[in-house]
Length: 74
Image (cartoon, rainbow, N blue to C red; front, side, top):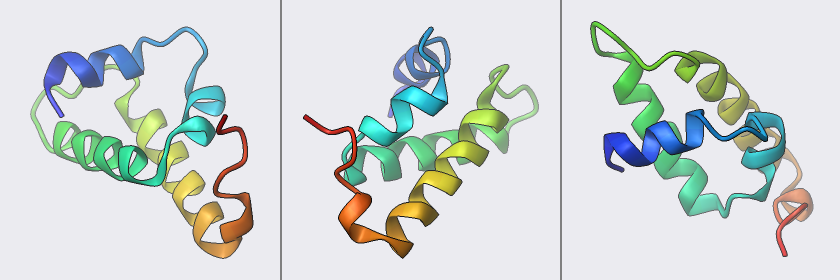
């Protein structure tokens, strides 16, 4: 995921609580990877840690309850 794509997620006005549950599993995994890499830099994007933490929670929720993985996905 490019830096510009990551910035688009982080600056989404809906916020992680609304966006993360709607992402397909592969896109969520890609976003978490990009957030992790960004947090491992000297100057991570503002808000990246919150997005990462909530993304990990969403991923864990899906792992515990696979039937909920499609929740919110059209």
